[in-house]
Amino acid sequence: MTENAFPPLLDPATAPFPTIAAWMNEAAEHELNDPTAVALATVDSRGRPSVRMVLAKAVGPDGVVFFTNLQSRKGTDLHGNPNAALLWHWKSLRRQVRIEGRAQKVTPAEADRYFASRHPESRRGALASDQSRPMPDREAFERRVEELRARYGDDDIPRPGYWSGFRIMPEAVELWQDRPHRLHDRVRWEKTEAGWNGTRLFP
Ligand SMILES: Cc1cc2nc3c(=O)[nH]c(=O)nc-3n(C[C@H](O)[C@H](O)[C@H](O)COP(=O)(O)O)c2cc1C
Ligand SMILES: Cc1ncc(COP(=O)(O)O)c(C=O)c1O
Image 1 (cartoon, rainbow, N blue to C red):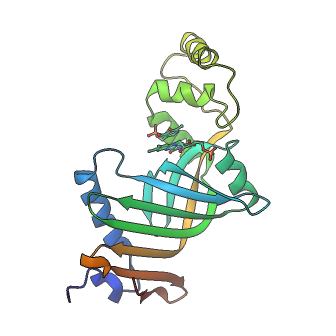
Image 2: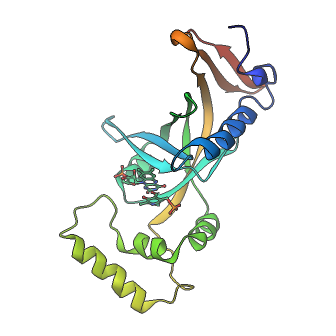
């Protein structure tokens, strides 16, 4: 029971991101689907929380990046209140990572670059979907995708201005590793001017 699951606790310059990167690599090998999938919690202008999954496209001390429709609930929440919380849970590894921080929109150039890397049908879908607003029927949505297929070649589907990304800038991070009989390892780091300050927490 003495093994330290978090050796980088001792390095305030980089902790806890090397461990997160290693866990992400293990998740990529072990998880059945979408190892980067993360629950994103936001709050609206009345302080009401909501949570949904997104795919993290980058994870590091410089931020956690995901892409979405800015007019969706998460988009309007983050526009009004940039505070966000993220949670990964890898069941196959019995690990949890929590990150809290503030959201910034990615630059148009970054959104363009990522948009261009997506499958053409996913790009058409982003144009066709009024994400999170009522859809009269599935056929209307599919008709829009069909029209876009006729209108644009695969290489010139434009990124709509309402589709972009956010970068959550980490201010607090917690790693949780399962240990037998709920005697888990938990460490929470807070970002300070001197670096990442880690504290062990009771499980
Ligand atoms: C595994 C998984 C990954 C998802 N990734 C994204 C994503 O990266 N971006 C996105 O806009 N929606 C993604 N979704 C859909 C969202 O969970 C959600 O249904 C949608 O974005 C609308 O959320 P909102 O109304 O809270 O904004 C994903 C769903 C799942 C289950
Ligand atoms: C609506 C929506 N947008 C974006 C994504 C992110 O996936 P990708 O950009 O890899 O297609 C997802 C993934 O499920 C999604 O459902």
